[in-house]
Length: 54
Image (cartoon, rainbow, N blue to C red; front, side, top):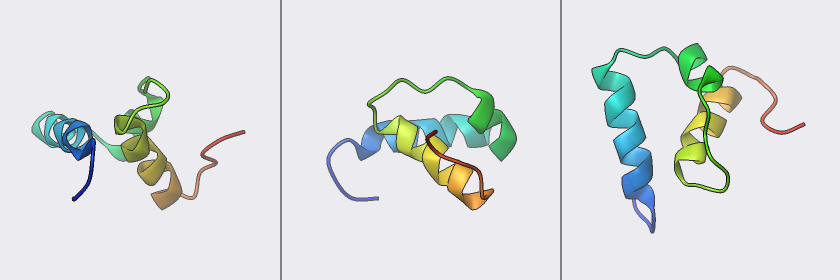
């Protein structure tokens, strides 16, 4: 990852991997808006074909 704010995204990914979190658990967790870590949740939602915003 390259860009401003990606350290937040990397941190979320590292914690998720360390805790062996599933994609569905990431989707159910609260992500503050607007944040870069929210992009991780949106990417997971897109990977599962779920709606990102209603």
